[in-house]
Length: 143
Length: 60
Image 1 (cartoon, rainbow over the protein chains, first blue to last red):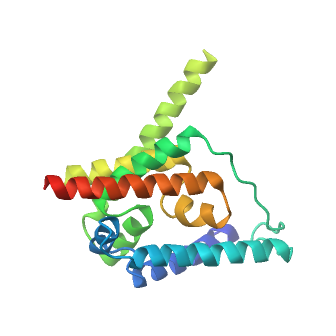
Image 2 (cartoon, one colour; image 1 turned 120 degrees about the horizontal axis):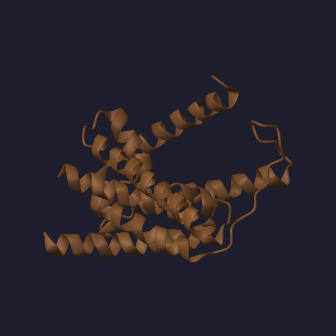
């Protein structure tokens, strides 16, 4: 295993452990969140963003290096484009139907929730359709 | 039920590729990095998911 994959594995295990413990993998909790009956997951998301905002700024300001490869922490953000809105709207629809999203799917799989196999198969299908459509539009523009 | 879940997953997979991230990628990581595109995406998927959830509850 390459060091980058090992680091990814450690981060993935930590993320899965924390979102499972935080009940972000519980479809009933997500449904109540989206029906505005439970503020818990909004608070959890806001807390994650607050920590992420502070942490990333702190790492950049102190000139810290990324774990692998050893480069100074920096990033650039993309400009807002219509595909962000269109794609996010499609995600929102799927999220409301499944009452879960990709990270919880993976968590549910590890928890032994059988129907996560269906949603994971769906995500793979959706990504495959996107890539196939992209290939075809690339052929169209070049040809 | 299985077909519905595969369909919902496909929407999420296709949409996340289109938007450059899912609820975690745009909603937590992108917003943490101060990306305006991620804030727009997060506002959009939250609004659509909340609206769709109320619609689903009304229909079922």
